Image 1 (cartoon, rainbow, N blue to C red):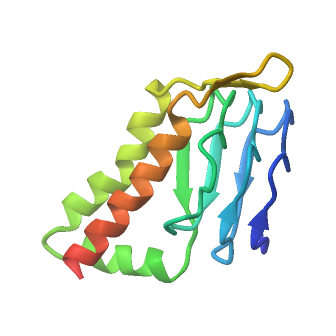
Image 2: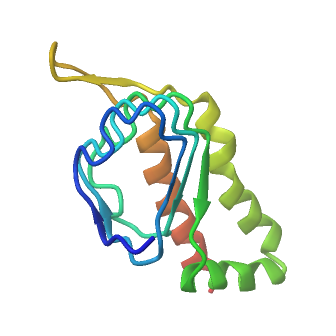
Length: 140
């Protein structure tokens, strides 16, 4: 997994895609890269602010329930924080996305009729990334 940028529509309508894994070099996921991937359940991404560049990134991904973090420098920092007294707080923050996603609506995006509803999964992941990064800075 060495992609730096995932272009918009890259996996658009990939109905059988169940998992997407990216490495720590990933800088951004653009457009509606995973639009209408109804079988997508899990994505592995680095913990970087501004990684998600579009509100409809996961529109139609109703089964997306898990986000895993890429092994790398940020992951090592988190692992070190988990060893400290605030470890439980960090663990709960990291795991929170996998509690939120199953109940976040998948949304829809349809060019043909101009229907747009991000459903909340993209927003939840973006908010979660920023929250975890803020806690890392706070605890460092």
